[in-house]
Image (cartoon, rainbow, N blue to C red; front, side, top):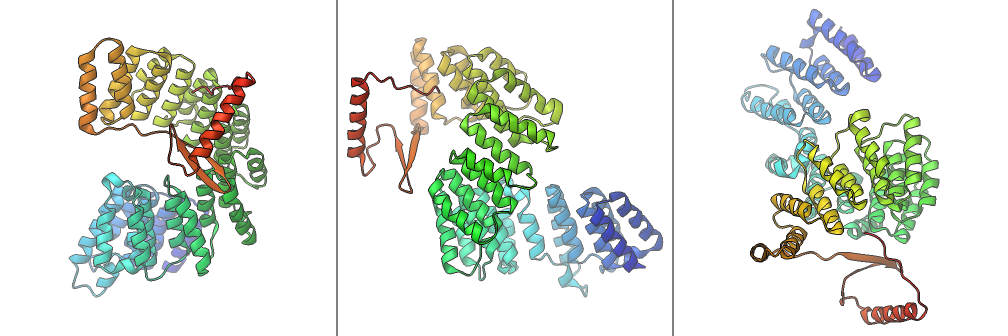
Length: 513
């Protein structure tokens, strides 16, 4: 009977029919069949894969209470409940179960199946992939790393790969590389984790591409769709069209250009490079665009400042039944900001919660504040901020401060700068703006106090950079830069251009901030 019930549970999972899982579970209880270890595992997996974590936890606790001989809860059962919690974002519950698992193992040393109770590589890789671990400030990831080293589980590929990803998410690429180099064997997941980690961190995009080239030269691993998606992401962040072309050829040779992950990353890559026509061609070739596809195209139009096209895509996306998310709204609000479409931007912002039950995040609020600020509607921006109950992050106050500075609103600027310094005491811009406001009002004692504070904190305003790609190489510059190897030729050309524009009475348009 246990075999028939296990088969029934598998069918329920395939159809994602939770009610049927509960019926089979109830029938198993009546027959007393849950004493079969395989049926226990199938029942737990059924609840896990249907996303009904609470029922899975209740079932697990029922089995645990009945398992006096410690024969039912083997490592597979434990892994099933832990991974189920992680997959459904019950991270704290997952770690509670892990501690319980360790306790269960250490206090049942007389059991014949002791090794079947010990956490294994699947247990640790599940936990390491949880959001609870990936959040650096509260992460137990380093403790899990230590546990893996102590128990020799670190030699497992899945655990090593999870640690590479974990440290890369934290921005600790040195530790990622150390784990990578310490692994006895590597697979494409290992390489992809390291390449992706570098691709996502600002300033490490070139290193990401270099690692891909090294992997290809070694010839032991063939890139998959996720590897190439990471590479195109790096090229997009560099906005380097020429660097991306060879990777398109590789994707073509491997037959991966029809994979949606590669297609989505290509839409993003071409968009970042400003080649929206090519991005549209790639998007139109996608058979069934998913949310990532639509968002990639929307972000491209947003960056180009073509709000009309972005809105058209947004409408088409809604008509096709794709529900927008926070990224969608950030893209469409950014498009409205770039083109000064205040009424539409406010309407879309309000629709987030009213129509889609999406709580605006700091980036959305900053975007709408910037939209109002650019239009000079600072009072409305202040009212909007005052009406938001959630705690506002520094980006919102920094955006308001920039708008106040642009329109000379000293009183509101003082409020924004003060709130910003409460959140980020070392913010250089807030110190400088506040100092200018105090100086304009003759409050020299406050100016002196701020300057002392700047000196004591060692705050230095970081310069802004501009960049240009020439001959497959990206060159970056900052104001009054003298470090570039061709700086003399650059300034000579600039002087010639300046002289020419004056002689021809050419007015050079300045881009509005």
